[in-house]
Image (cartoon, rainbow, N blue to C red):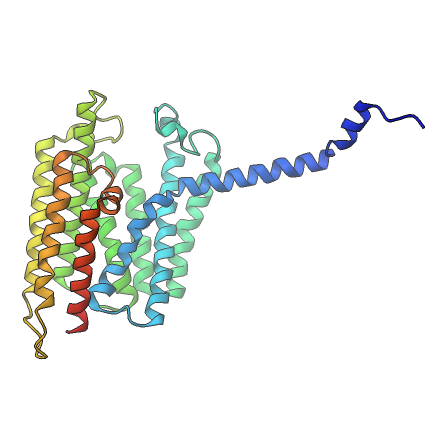
Length: 324
């Protein structure tokens, strides 16, 4: 019997049209899913850990039910933030294509179609607050809906308004800090709100200051990365983050000094926690002053000294809550 030709062998080894289509569809789906995930900015999800702020401050992390609810709030807040990123990138796709760095974003480079990004973003923006109304509390749902609306307004026009842009970004951090408390029905104290709000403003202004210093050093277009960055001066942004840092420290100290040592004779843990808190602000200010606080999550997680100070503060704070 004659041996089959090499051409026939190669033809037989090739997948059929249906197999090729299935493989292409599989690759396309994986690429689309990966692009959507990248657009959702997983690296930024660490910010949503702030939903633990109020429960930690109130010492309400001692039950499995509370932890479970906070995990749900974290996931829902992450969904809301992802919705904003998706819609923002879809809206800015044309402008991003002309940007030397943002052109690599999944929506700008075509990995994720604009319509798909809009659809996924709108779906998350609607479903996350609706899920919060069922799984959490009406207050939590209202907070998430308010967050989405404010952030979308920021993407559309508020980011073009001087000073208002700083306030809106700060409000986003403050809403994260409030979410856990609303879910667990915790009364949010004035000192908690003041410390959280001005602490967030400190980091936001320091970030803008660092971006402006970096772009000035590179002799680039000051307003290229952010619409209003060129409207600010380094002197003004320095004033804002210094003012915010001072108010945050003062509010925390006033809160810590409200109570003395416990009747059981323990050390005044609450007051002692002022020391690492102030040191952490001073340490972060080193990076802000040097103009290297452009990525807050990198500063917080990569500086070993700052991590150590944070751990000491956490230990003292836990002792303060336990011995209250």
